[in-house]
Amino acid sequence: MKALKLRWHIHLTLLGVAVALSACSLWLPDAEDDLAPYRAAMLPHAQSQLARVGTVPRYDIDLHIDTERLTVTGHETVLYTNDHPDALNELYFRLYPNLPAYDGEMQVDRIEIEGKEIEASYEATRTALRVPLPYSLRPKQRIRLKLDFKLRVQQRDGGRVLMGQSQDILSLPNFYPMLATRRNGSWDLSIGPDFADAVFSDVALYRVDIDAPQDMVMVGTGVIAGQEDTPEEGAVGTPALPGRRITHFVSGPVRDFGLIMSPVFEVQTMTIRDVVINSYHLPEDAPAGYSALWRAVAAIQAYSDAFSEYPYTKFDVVEAPLEKHGMEYPALVLIGSEVYRTEKQRLEPLVAHETAHQWWYNLVGSDPVNEPAVDESLAEYSLYYYYAGVYGQRYAEQMIRTRWLEPSAVIQEKGLDAPVGSPAHALTRDNYEAIVYAKSSMLYNELRQYIGPAAFDAAIRNYLNSYQYRVAPVGAFLAIASGATPRNLEAHAAKWREPILTPPPQ
Image (cartoon, rainbow, N blue to C red; front, side, top):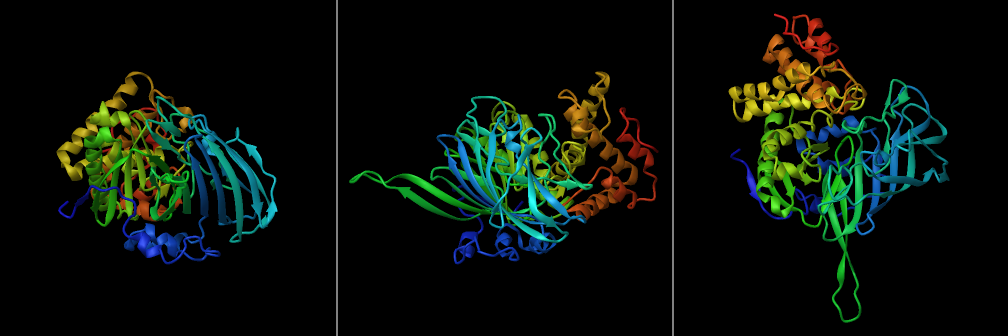
């Protein structure tokens, strides 16, 4: 922690990338083979990883935000490479704002492929868009699509606001048509319950230009690579009116693009291991915002030591209108305002859990609807590494009892137990968190005790290395763990399918 440096000013540019990129435009006319713009979002040790993802989708998005009408107008260009073994005759895009949990309204007005307008169709209750291709896209063949879209969001005065405006904060997660994930020869268009995570996505690269009012403090995935102000002219003899600002974001390889903004955000900043860590909060919540900053710093430190070095140049923790809940996006996590005010005891574990999702969801992807425990279990079990690293083993063992063991016992007493490997639809609002977070973490803790800490830690690092920037299926971690120990793991693997926890094998 001795290397920490505190900076208290509003962070408009990050790590000098604006200087580095000012001599050339991010929007090169034919840049599909040029990975240079995306390196600005990656730390030097991670820039070589871009070569591993050279064929992932690339999104170029121009966005205009009307904060008075709460509308977003976007133009999106997607460069897609068919990385599947079979030819494709169609692509699917997810329109996540049309989910009831988002309470938005998205429509796609026009789709163009190679100068030809394409007739698309909505599916899955308008949360998916089927785009027929003008020709069969062979394996390794590329295609470029252009989409024009509009999004309307709601003004909300209370409750958990995943998308929309509340408390002077405008939340715009997954604001764009996003390519669906293709698994086992078919496109996944699953819609989960509103208490579970919704977004299932592959890794992509992003360049996003956002046109918004100048007074907006903008927070998004990736780094700000430049900004231009466009003041509006007032009447003759009067000062110019407050104008607008175009902010250029660029990302490294990430699962999706998160965006949140407010004219009243304040920010506190630290640097650890060359990562710029920002805590954005409302003015009245500055003390809790400072606490959130330190917890994020400690989490990045602990997980970089335990799993792998954090790869991006910055990480943001942001106050959001999510009540006492949190939400993860690449290089960005949101923490509900109630946690900053009346639920402060939840701040540390919530920041630590959401930060762990940078490894388990972002770097290693999974299906949050049909296999929710794959990422949530490891993100939650990462708290063991956090508390052991920050406070010591004794404190970590106390956390295991109060956060995992006791909730697991309660759901058994209430008759709400269920297999950890259940899809989200098979769980309820009453037992989802206890099963997917607490019970799954108890299983990981049993496994660590059974095969030994050294073998378990080696397995978790091997799992990350094997599935980084990919999608990990159910059972992948146990398969890797079985190779790290001579002990038989069949009995432990069965527990993911059983409704009741039993003592670990001796």
